[in-house]
Image (cartoon, rainbow, N blue to C red):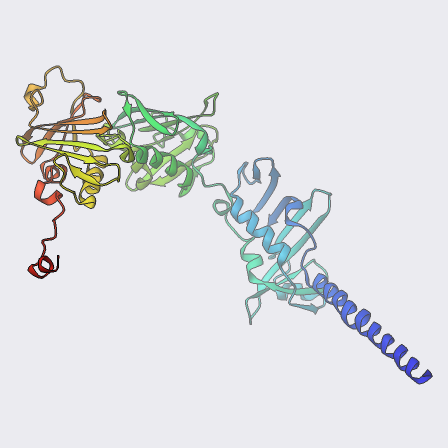
Length: 452
């Protein structure tokens, strides 16, 4: 019995030893090892300032409420991406090896005056730094140190993420704004002056005329300003604006944001070869973009206005009148959602859906005249064709078809009053033949007739 108790106590002691020393102790030793391997023990979000110094230049960054700022060699906004990458690189880098050297051997590792020095301070006032030297002869590492006789091997990416040019570090957006808050845009270009106003979720042109704007064209303006990036900076101050064609810019864009319509703007020069000069109103530097950057701002009135001729909700349509070449077809959706001619023949549903798709996507090829006093020249007094869509007995939209001119046809939506042209080839989609609409009735074979 006593022997069994002793064995039990020894087993418990052994288990305790294994748990506390081998398992828990192993975990602690692993943590200590990982901490010892870390280049820096800090949270990247706690860093408030960074200084990078080399033989040729010094960069100093400070964190602000609006993001990182470059304070030296110029004062401007920084690109958040490379700064974040640098901080992530520093805070996750590990020392893969530590070498003990003599003080006079630092130059052999590039850790003398040739080294790249990275210093930082945190919110709590903690300061630290690292010297980044030469690349190792084997492996993707560089030598690093703190000026003493200990040299570390760290990933080469730590140095490459710190060793950048001013242009690499600086903010490359042409203008800063919140796209979702923009309520008005004014654009002046060689093609004219245009004003866009947001009404609900749609954009409206108010200048040079009042009409619905092409949503994709307005989105193209905002997307280019939001996602486009500069190619270079040619001047840090605006006193050379005349030299770069910016005192009388060829392109001027102003954005009005929020309920108070806070204004921001920028200007662009005429292209010089493949280069365009630009300047944001609130920042002093003059930058360049390529000529493709101007594409969304270089449209005429036709390019910016909505070219859709008919607006209607397809799900509400349950009656269609098609009148063309003295033939009237009336298509009606019954209570079972089956399309039929008013004479009863069942129609091919895909054909009717195709017709509705053609009508909803119908776009003007040219805007001929706004509010014309006379419709006779266009053959629209007594139209050669008409399309009417109904929701029950309520008319939804109407389209009048006028004369043909070459390969175009004059058409008019009476509610919009403007005369536009569409391609003549579109008529076969808008006025399908009866034989193509009606679903074929399966004929009984003689055998089936005998069985019945």
